Length: 153
Image (cartoon, rainbow, N blue to C red; front, side, top):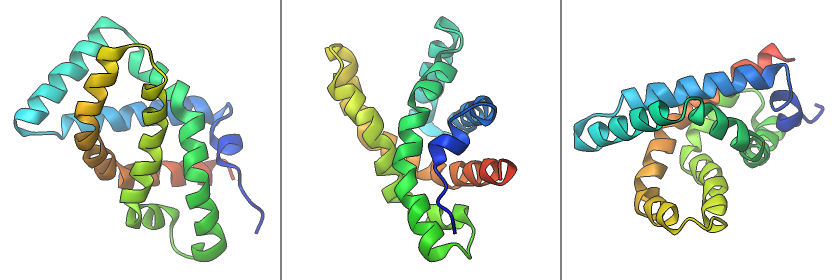
């Protein structure tokens, strides 16, 4: 089985534009599903960010996509060499804690290199709940990745 490079397959156009758009839709859906006081706060902050800077979420996803794909690559490689008979989405979902940690390591690194101390402090306060949210998003993200890989095969 030949190795697939996720960055080459999904991070280059033409699929990149659609992958980014689908990831933004996923974020939108995940935010909409939040409830309680935390959900209200998250929805309010998200709406504010989207109103203040049009295209902000799309720009962030686009900027981080290559790094996220690189972090997903070892999971993909392990799946393809050991577990390729079961769906990739199932494989990634079963490892959602590890996948979430890998994806968050991208933003962790970015935050550590920022000069914006207020943003850094805010990120560190929210990091724990961010992991929970990313873990919850791994199954739909996994299906998104699998769908795009199948369409670019």
